[in-house]
Length: 590
Image 1 (tube, rainbow, N blue to C red):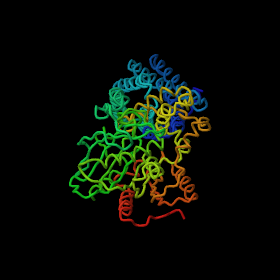
Image 2: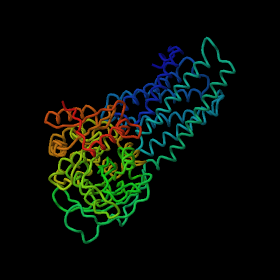
Image 3: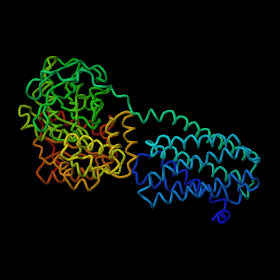
Image 4: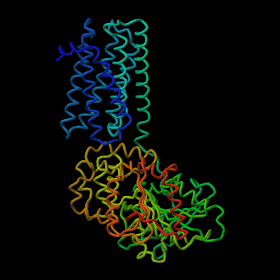
C-alpha cells in the first residue's frame, strides 16, 4: 500500500485538501446536528486525514534522507493508517462509534503533535516554528478531548473540523508552493511558511482558549437559588387561585411598565393542593379602569426550581415578547405562571396538560386579587412551544375548572400537540434529546408508577439526570445541548412508546376540541416541533370539527418564529385586538 502511495500524482492533493476544508467547515458549524450525520462526517474526515498522512509519509516527495526523517515518516504513516482504519470502523461498527471517534480524534491530535515535535530535530527541518506551534496545538487539543469527555462530540465538531480546515489549506498551499513543473521559489516558500506558522498559531491559541473556557461552558449558568419568597407560608388558605404573597419585580421589566412576582395556590391533577409562583406586568400608567389581560404559558425553561422565569434577569423574554410589549403599550396586562416546580418545590410536571392548565388559570385568579390595579374578568391565553401545549390545555379545561373565567381566545405558537409524534420526530436531534431527558426526569417523579428511569436507553440514566439539572437558557442551554450530543441513541426508545409511557404521552397530547377562538402558528423550518407533525394534528382536529386560524411562516425555525422581526408578531397583536373587539374569528378548517 505504501508503495502505491508513491504513485499518487501531486495534483490529487489540492482536491483532497479542498474536500477537507469543506468537510471541516460543515463539522465546525453543525456540531449540534443529527448525531448520525455528524458521526458519518467525522468518520469520512478521519479517512481523509489518514490518507493524507500516508501520502505525506510515503509519497514521492516525502523526506527519505535522514534517520530522524525516517522516524517521523513512519510515525506519520502509521498514524495515518490507524486513522483511516478507525474512520472505516466508525462507519460500520455502530455500537462502538462514539468511543472509537473519541479515541481516534485524540490519537490523531496526540500523534500529530509528537511527530511535529520530533521533526524539530531533523537537520532538514527549515520551519521549526511551524513544527513547534503545530505540535503544541495538536497535543493541547488531543489532551482536551481526553480530559473533558463530556464535551468530546462538541469538541469533535469545533476542533476536528478546524483541524481539517487547517490540514486541507496546508495541502493546497504546499501544492502551489512546490509543484513538480513549477519548482518552489523563495517567495512561494515564504508564503507557504507564513501560512503554516499562522495556521498553527491560530490552532494553538484556539486550543488554549478552549482549555480555559471548557469548564465554564460545561458548568452552565450559576443558577439563582429561590429565596424565601418561594417558600409557602405554613397557613395556606383552602382553594386554588388564592394570592399568598406579592413583591415588586424590578429587573427585566418592559419599558413604561410595572411588574410584581406572585405566589399563589393551585392544585395538582389529582386534586391535592399545590403552590406555584408567577409574575404580573401592567402599564406604568395603568389608571383605574379594568385592564384587558393576556395569560401566558411560557415555553421550556427546565424542570428544576432555579429555572423559574420570575427568577431570571429577563422574565418577559419568553415567546412573543415583542407582541407582549406592544400590547402593554396599548394598555393590556400580562400574567405569567412559572408552573409548579419552577421557583417553588417540585417536581415540575413538564408537558403534563392538566397541571400546566391549572397553573395558568390559577395565576389569573391570583393576579385579579392584587390591589395595585384592576383586571377585567376575561382573558386571552397564549404560549409558545411547551407554553403552546399549556395554553391549549388551559382552554380545554377552563369551563370545568374555572367557569368564572371568560376566555376570549387561545393562541398556540409551535405548540407541542402530539407528544408521541414529538418524541419520535426529535429523538435524534441534540435539542430533542434535551426535551426527552426533561420528560424522563420529570415524569419519573410525577408518575412513579411508570418507572420511567427503567425504560430509557440503558446507560443513559446519568446523562439524562445531568441534563435535567440544567435550564434551557443561557450557558445552561449550551451545556444541555452538548450533553445531548453525547447520546447516540434516543433517550426514550421506540419500544417504550408502545407501553404505558406511550399511553401517558397520548393522554397528555391535545385531543380535545377548543370551544374558543383559536390561533395556531407554525414555522416551516422548525427543527423541534416539526411542521409535518403540526399539519397532521391540524388536519385531525379540523376533521373532528375544530375551528381555528392556522398560519405557517416560511423560513422560521422554532425560536425565530417568535423573535421580534417575525411576521407572526403583528398578526398576533392583530388577533388579540380582534378578540377584545369581539370580531368573528377566522376559520381555516374548510
